Image 1: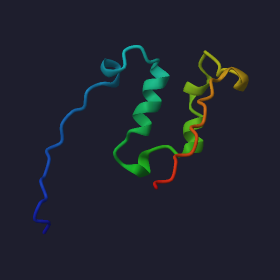
Image 2: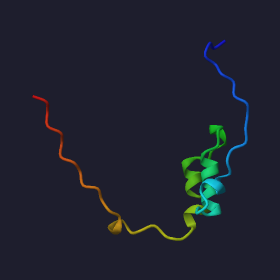
Image 3: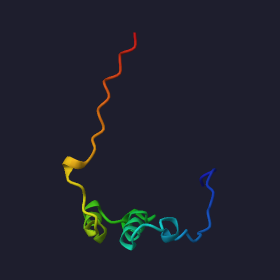
Length: 79
């Protein structure tokens, strides 16, 4: 037996629509799938990218319009 094991009773979660009211139904469906407790029940990365959420407008911005964070200069070595 595990000495520090604490059993938890199952409880209902907060609906994603309540937590993310501005998210589309497809966005909430994808989020629910990605947050499933059982890893075997979660979609693969490939399956997740096929989700209808990624076909919703707005379309992604062209790469040329995506801001780039400038790289920091390397930290100076300690003396």
